Length: 282
Image (cartoon, rainbow, N blue to C red; front, side, top):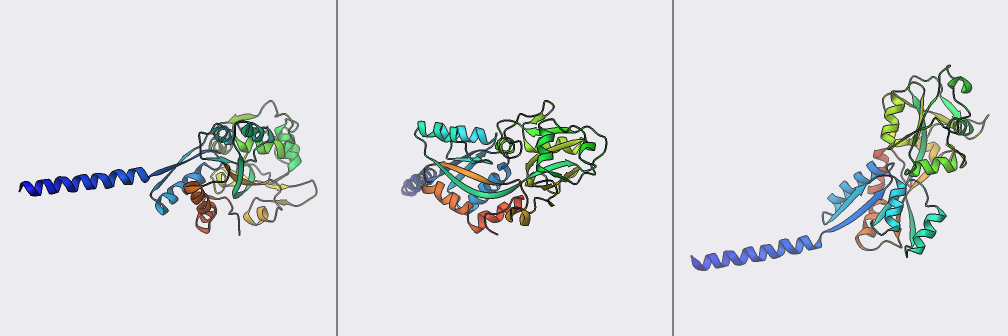
């Protein structure tokens, strides 16, 4: 009986050693940044945990600028960004020894949305710009009802804010009445309950959402207006399209590289479509 107890103790020690070894082989990957990509990153993290249980992928949002600063400061493995990094950010990264590596991981049509009760179905890019810089303030100025336009935007931490300011506003100042929201979800909720509301964001946040209508957008006056469908985004007929990015410090290695390769694989890209964005390849 005593011998059995000793054997049993030995087995516990061995099992304990196995458990310890297993724990030591666990690896964590951190992704910080874009709120536009938050749901997508969470879906990737959950699915990859089933593909490779030894790796835990931790996802936090806050905005692309938050993720970019985290990358520059060396506190994240992957920065998720809904806009390209600016030259000033790349220069700041370089000054801290960070080699910025850009990796497209999905395609998006940046959608312009209004309240579902609004009869306006389309705008030009210039009309959107003039609404957001405060030159157009009533829907009657763009063929709609006599109703004040209530303008919603993401806040300045958002990569979508930066992309929109550069590519739609052409770096002009925002109108005085713009209401800045901490997340795209909050922006969508406000537009859905505000008859004169208008907002913008990643197309996945607005698809099939009650109380919201996605507008067709024309590149110029007199040209056809297109909805941000997959076909129109891929063909570039929809004028406000963009890539969604991962950024790493140098070429990714080890588990980070394997995770990113999986994200860009057929399996990972299928999740892009499920969430409501568009995969890199048709």
